[in-house]
Length: 161
Image 1 (cartoon, rainbow, N blue to C red):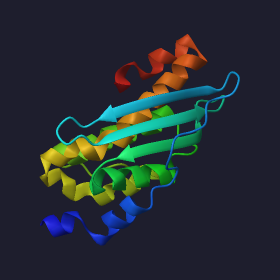
Image 2: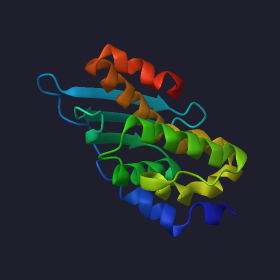
Image 3: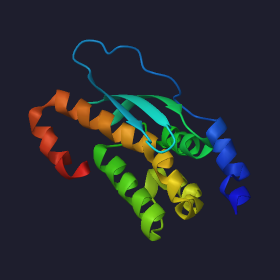
């Protein structure tokens, strides 16, 4: 079963991580944010920088991920799909991913459907946190950027934590 978990698809996603590296410091009144998450059990870590446009969609994205192949694979899917995403799409992907890992859900749909490649991780609870670090850090970064944009946008993500 462990061989299935680390399939060629997972290893390919882990090896090809789009938007790898941190973003340069923001200029002017850019709507930017940084999020960081660490999986306590294994030490997998993701630091994510985002820049949002006026409608709250991600226009720039950078990620520094130090994780196992599963965490890197999730970050690879995220990097492929995150430009243009809204906070609501990221929350929905995070929630669907959590349901997939913990309660047999189908996984994310739409732009983040590629995260379904990690469905077998459900059978390995010790790997759940490392699989989630990049998406959780991305959500934290977006929330921070929205808070910089306008105090009123903080309430739109009140249930997203």
